[in-house]
Amino acid sequence: MSLWTSADAARATRGRSTTEWTANGVSIDTRTLQVGDLFVALKAARDGHEFVAQALEKGAAAALVSHIPQGIAEDAPLLVVDDVQAALEGLGRFARDRLQGRVLAITGSVGKTTTKEMARVAFAGQFAIEAAVASYNNHWGVPLTLARTPPEADLLIVEIGMSHPDEIAPLSRMARPHVAIVTTVAAAHLEAFGSLEGIATEKASVFDGLEPGGAAIYNADLPTTPILAAAAGERGLSFGEAEGADLRITNITLADDATIVQARHENYDILYRVSAPGRHLALNAASILLAAEPVGADPDVTAQAITKWQPPAGRGTRETVTLDEVEGRSLTLIDDAFNANPASMAAALDRVAAAEPPKGGRRIAILTDMLELGPDATTLHRALADHPGMNRLAQVHTAGPLMRALHEALPSDQRGQWAETAEELVREVRHLVHSGDIVLVKGSKSSRAALVVDAIRELGHRGRRPAAEAR
Image (cartoon, rainbow, N blue to C red; front, side, top):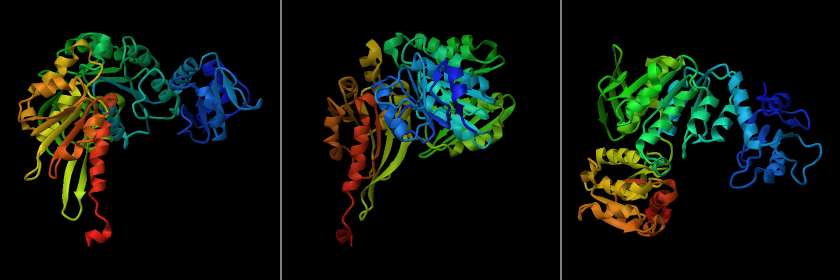
């Protein structure tokens, strides 16, 4: 059964189809386009109309366009609309209207994608699931996710993000979730909102789109919890360590490779395990357990399935980098270079502080700037020096003008190397880490912490001796 017919797509977008066609998927990128996809010619960094010919050559079923691109054959399968972005939103709304299953929406300053992927794994054995790809959570990511969802899906998991005010509510109203989760509220995109209270109000607007009888799930441990609770109203369900939380975490045990959590919900004790260390992961998983009954899942099965989740690359993955295969020299790398704000930085520091290096090894952090924090950015970077557990780290190396504040606030024996850019720090990486070390690398994506991750991995390639030498 096809995902889209030309007739349904034309009705959804109020467009005109040049010929009859059927599509099995929806794509906005010719690099990942599959045969049979409807190619959507969005205007982003480049105008998607420039790639229509390539999309059709690669086997696209049709292209959604606002005009017929130059050089395209008159009989080419096109869906012509007034505005491609508006048409994509039309596809999303039409797909949501025909969806037979339930929708779970997830937002939060930290942990959206992690919680989405946890939910995908936790509910996979109970439902036919569709979920947002990567971090497709913005004005085109949400409608694209909806447009890709087949009508017969049991559960759709949508991630909703924001970078400016008044972005979340319209996307939630489009997705019309049966359950909505706010993972946390933290100083991310503070530049655009001015205060945590402003961020909390924006995050809470995810509840605006809830279906009648829907569940509004929120974090009970925050200074801004009252804002979330007020927005949730009678639909609210809370999770956290706070007294009175509907799902209350009573104990968290961090190990090198796992988090063991004891919790209580109503009159039941719950024990669950997350296959990576981190208090924030315990909370993310708690929100999913609280969502289980409202989406129609079995809470016990969900709790057991959560352990199958593994962190994706760049979001806290832990790996061994072999420095010398013959001598058995290696280090442990924690790759958390996808993004950073004060809350996620604190969680990452907790993780490396809880890790136990082998004899002779050290706990090392290599940190790059946290961005979009507004006028308090310098203060927020400096405050990391006072984070509990920071004193368990042997050295902290930093890169970026904002991280200079942390560098100067650290005790002299803990103060590592500082560089203006991540690129400069990369050149020194082989002197910063040693065999036996546990090394955390974290920073905002635009501050290029991933370059440091790559450089540490490259140390492993350099450490491999030729076969003749290894004999």
